[in-house]
Image (cartoon, rainbow, N blue to C red; front, side, top):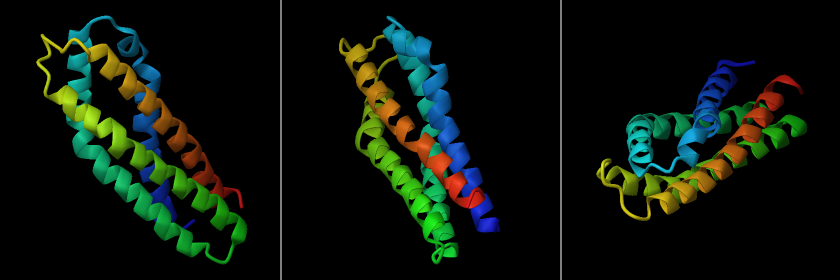
Length: 150
């Protein structure tokens, strides 16, 4: 394993862990009937994620892409790695197209007086978060497999 592959695995793991951890641990927030609770938690999480995830997610994509040049002549590794890269890019597209605009909406809310449609926004955000989690988890597994199993 090269240092580029190592860095790619670390960045890919961290990016995947943020999505998977949020998906796994925030079930009570997904089920809450409290717009105030939802808004406070979402705004707090997003305040951190909005600063960290663009850097980490883009760096993961770049390092995965760079690492594919190292296996250019190994068809099996290349195909599995390319599939992983496509899944990471698809995750980023879903994030930028759907989750980020919803995050920006929620950031503008007053936590003690969320809008009447807060539950609809919560559910929409969650659907797209589930989708991107279902993209990034197999992407991570495939990338690690492309580096370690072939």
